Image (tube, rainbow, N blue to C red; front, side, top):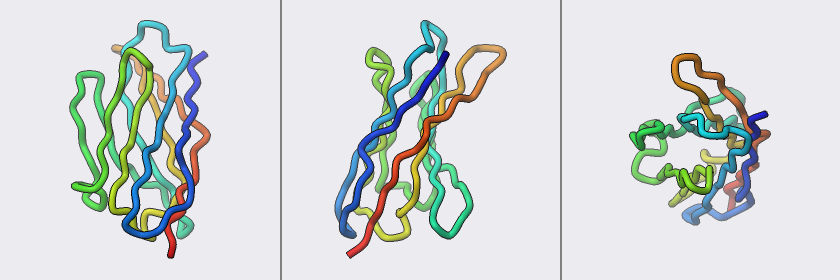
Length: 118
């Protein structure tokens, strides 16, 4: 059974940084793509960043230049480094993994809260 668990959320002031981690277990040797979504208090879930099994990355316009997604395949862990945070980044951040080759199944973590306020 594939499971994902996020960590690293917390409360910070504007301009500060946080690094989120997403640990994947149970995927065996199956390849997977990874990504982060966030859901803000105002509602709506938005894609933040993705990284493919080949290491290709994409970002939403709102975080481009401030956030960096990466992965450590040996540790089965994805990271989201978030710099220069602002109050609009406040949200629950959830990671997902699309596991498989021809047929891909998406698995989700429970999410971690990020609060940015002065």
